[in-house]
Image 1 (tube, rainbow, N blue to C red):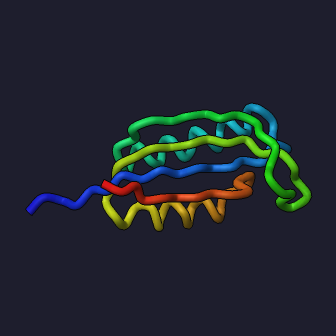
Image 2: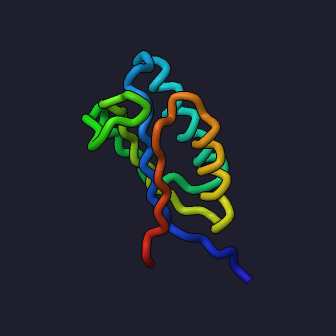
Image 3: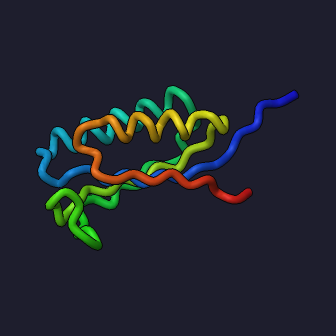
Length: 98
């Protein structure tokens, strides 16, 4: 029996208060994590954008979109790591419809 793989999309919002090097480090950390546990289809850096509403007194965030294919249990682990990583102010993981 073959493994079930699903397509996912994840948007990561990194604090714009970080330096460019720190933003790059956070982005690379998740890129490497996804590559280790899933197939990374694409990374789309949207860059610095104004937030729709302030989050923790921040009005700007650095957006990165990851598209990946993985087993169904990986997104929960990815979300857990997003939540405990300094500099991540919002994250969203969506399962794409086949």
